Image 1 (spheres, rainbow, N blue to C red):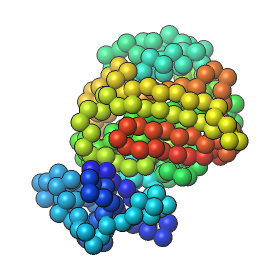
Image 2 (image 1 turned 120 degrees about the vertical axis):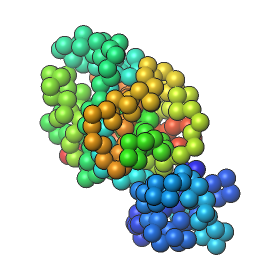
Image 3 (image 1 turned 90 degrees about the vertical axis):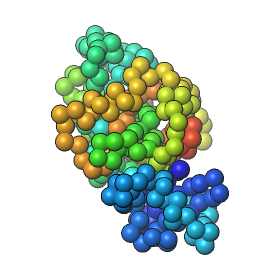
Length: 287
């Protein structure tokens, strides 16, 4: 199933998409106002979230796709967003290219332990249709399209799309600047939905395009099969010896990187599409 959280005039509503249509779960059960509410209630009942949601799918609570698309917001309000790095060859190559100490990234790509780092809090995370940020003190900024794993109490419950915004000029100066290059206002976007029934997260088509003044200035496509590590390994590394929060998202690594010299500008539009999840669309602003 596919879940949306609504904002705007519909703030505090959870919608589920099934083969039959879109249904307002909050209208059927007032306590189900978010994906967290659904995951929590399902955990208490010893059920899967989809099984609980199915109990509250009613014909009289069907909702139009136009209403969902006009009001959908960040689909999961994660207590923490973490990210994995150097899990695709293109990411390893790009980070070696930007860095004054390139060999360290090759060592991570081939190492037994993956790179996993803190990315964002809820206040730094935006949803579809909102603006992602580029730092005013950075000269080289790129989006990083990634498959996101949604975790409830450390267990995988679904998948979403993430944009791990990155200041490559800052990180390239010194690897110790990674937190400044990655964690800042509007540094992460998630959306448009959480999907719970993806059979194989390692065989999904992923694409990204960037438009500026009506022109396409970047377009690329890949597949999550190109990821050198699997989702289970990344989750295991994130949760090991770590008191994870109730609800978290773990981004699985940068799958596409614009050519060297490309940098985002204000009002650019970024579209990230992952098969079965949808399209995450954000414009850009300087923060």
